[in-house]
Image (cartoon, rainbow, N blue to C red; front, side):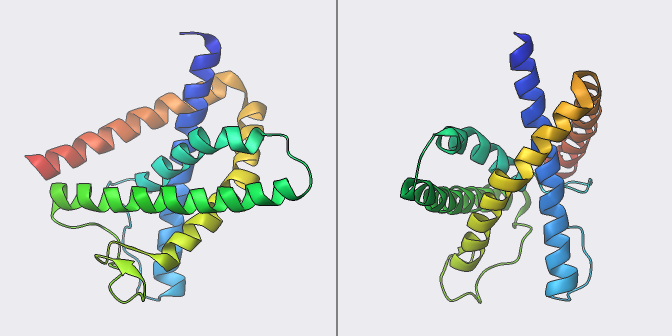
Length: 185
């Protein structure tokens, strides 16, 4: 595998971990500050991350990067932002729906609130309001946060990013193994 391929995999993995952490922090913020329910660990794993957010971010990066890189002028630039928003909404909602089924099959439930009280929902698993937030979050991630992460990765250099990726990968693998043992054995 080429050096560039390794760098891309490392970049995607580090982005996955950062977005998983940001997703966990977002969930905790909503629970503690917005809804005032008090703190509970929002992830299914032990570490402070929600992998479903990392998966969503990776899918955004992989699927929407070509659209983001297109050179467009005038009104087409605004249409692209609308298209990115709608695609982020659809992708994240699809991932949330799939994750709810997978986690329900594996653990008996899904770890986020049901959307039964939301006006527009499907099986209380997904709803329009969170989907809109996912679309807005996707815009924020793709247009603001990811460029900052890319600059951070470049500033840290290959050696430090590689070490961070290996350490995080080992911790994440141990966490996933512990979850599998706890869930399936």
